[in-house]
Image 1 (cartoon, helix red, strand yellow):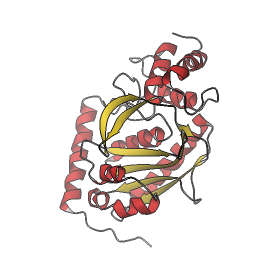
Image 2 (cartoon, rainbow, N blue to C red):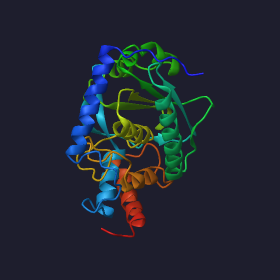
Image 3 (cartoon, helix red, strand yellow):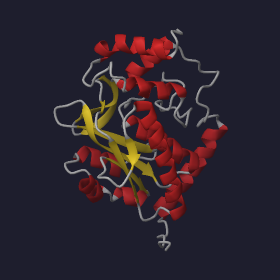
Image 4 (spheres, rainbow, N blue to C red):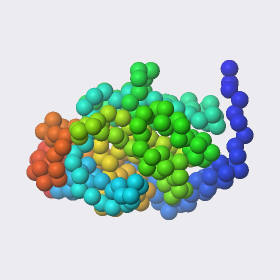
Length: 276
């Protein structure tokens, strides 16, 4: 039986219109590219190793005064050690057709991420440790009780970041380490339900990948979705190599950039045949 869909509020309808126009504008400007190994952005082992260090061992945000501010900060290597069980939670506003499309997208993408990391990653009925929320504007603003129910002990700063997300933030992901460790135990991704097709898929690609460990964005990462310039919409070949490197057993959780750099250089040379 098809569930009745609530009528969108004026606020949600305005957001949907805004992102539809934005997607058209970005495509007209040559952004949101879907090619994954473009000739105009070649990589070599040196570029790959440096991009890996920047994306996987630096943080895009620093926490200060119980909020997050944009600041590149050296960090440690974080990743998952346990299987990742994703759960999709849709707000009541999300139409059935979009739910079916999104579920197929996440199922296929989770399998791809699993192949790259050799980590079991599934969209399954098992108790979830990675919650993916698809909410419209009104649902997201009112999501604090849902967030507390899904992730007990979630910080007020994360809740505020989600519920007060500005239009300039298209989607978001958070990964939470187990206490006293450098391995993740919980993750959360928030996808705007108003996004048009390509921006929506781009959000899934970036946020689900970043919550596995490559948490930073850099203007120097190219070709990559780990770059806020939105040039590339979908996981690129370089992004795939970054994920493979992150989960290589020669790197271990807790490493600093200086500890990881020589290993990353050797891994990059091996992956690219010594090119660069």
